[in-house]
Image 1 (cartoon, rainbow, N blue to C red):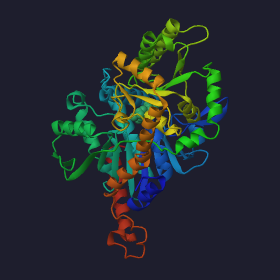
Image 2: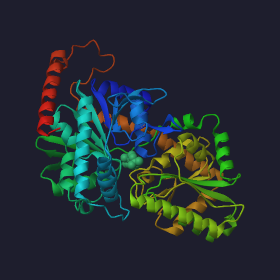
Image 3: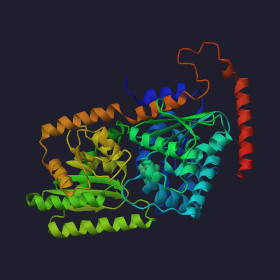
Image 4: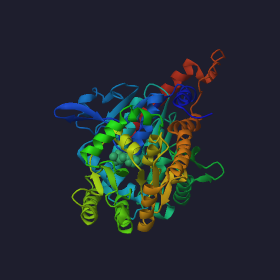
Length: 531
Ligand code: G6P
């Protein structure tokens, strides 16, 4: 049976045994900000929120995140809670407020100047700063406290997201051993040689081993993680069950390749996508020329300079293509407080200018760099009108732009040019696969995208669409929650079995006792941790 929103809802109802679902992720799915004095909301760019929001819409529960918008306080209640999606609420967003120093050390520092480059093999040197580490620990404690508050009224399954929160699982388990805790690591996990240079490697691993289940995108990431644990931590590794056994606790380590909700494409495209695409074409003087598009956060892992060098090489190799197409790069500003990100924006601007100067003329500029946030309605219209989409990451856990592009092509046309170094390349074998470090191969990939005959586009696109339809976000969340749901005590009876005798553990008294014990442990732990 295929995975759908309805089947995931069913899993959430039956496998979570009435436990509340609490997601912890640094980035919030909806950001409120002021525009011309009015409060507006936007969906941030980035794979994590794209993937998790449909899951939360289906399952309900609470998403605990950093409140980062300048109107976030205004839009939330006194405890930082707000119903989302803002236009049709189906779950709760609980915002956590962070001071500038904490954000600097934890988010810009430890998470994005140390763990991000450490885990991606892009030759950017990680920054190891003890002050960042202090802030990372402090903010992990702040988030753990917020989760414990949200979980205070009973059993819960806490689903922690990503590299911002390696320490949260252990903090939660120490305070509330009854909580079921899982974590998904959205970025790659490097080899032991690389990871173990980190001065706080043991503490990070220990924090993560507080989980009942850890998910990565690929088996390779799981193997790397287990190898790190094996070398750095005293424990037993069960290589048949892919689990770490330590101090009487088991942590399962498994791959769950993330995906998108294919139905969202129709929602975002609507009936008027062609009008929106025409408006974008008019605004940027694109005429009716063929378009190659790139859609990314401006991040050095995404290989944006490499794809621009590919465009330059393509125009040198095939001057007959001059005036025939545009390369449109949507580059959402990201982490611009970090110098490496500011430098990259400058590099991309410089390269675009150089290529336009070399190959363009008054009536035609090959590269259009749109360095601003775009909503999904415009992005999907662009996907749909494009001849091809270019994803040239130097290293990427999955890359959901590749999958989004495929879902936008209900017409079975368009070519995906995809880096071999993305998780997505394992599933989307009908893409034109490239090594982005190889400028010839990249240029040839772009040429293939612009010249592929329609029947071949159709053959490839149909197979890729079938793959994403089947391996969708509901399969990801459903298999992950089913796996970790096995750890939730006393699952609700299966539908239709309501008349059966309740198991002893499900009696109200047993439940009340469990909650009382858990609350006592929470109070003890918070007191001893000085929280
Ligand atoms: C990657 C990370 C996510 C992050 C996203 C956007 O996908 O794995 O955790 O949310 O990038 O980055 P940002 O720093 O803006 O949240």
